[in-house]
Length: 128
Image (cartoon, rainbow, N blue to C red; front, side, top):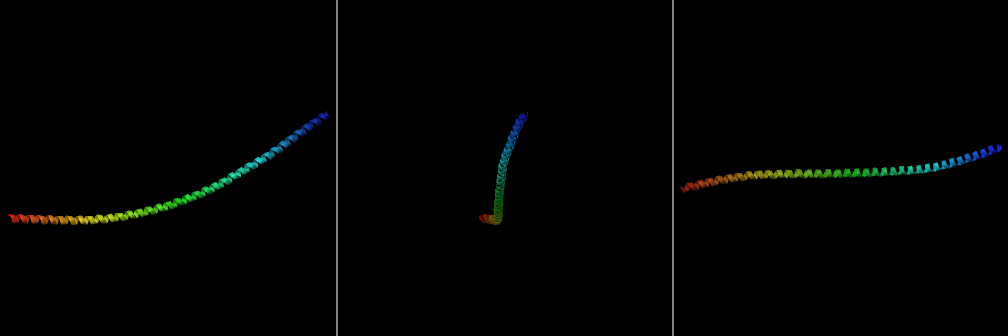
């Protein structure tokens, strides 16, 4: 019986030793995988930080370009407005001159008609 108990203890010790070795191996493997995952996460975080910084920079540049473009558009619109106002004032002046010229022509035409009528009347009177 003693030998049997001794064999059983030896087997049990072997099993405990195997289980401990497997546990240590598993623990080492776990730590290695954990380190690997931590490195990957760290790399992903750093990549994300760089990408966010690049996007922020690109956004700032795009915003600045939009502001510059808007200023240029505003300046162009103001210049076009000034030119339109100038052209309108010039047109109003020309219309005013044309109105004055048309009135003079009507007056001259009226005088010419009266003179022609008077001359025609005088001619008829002489012919009678």
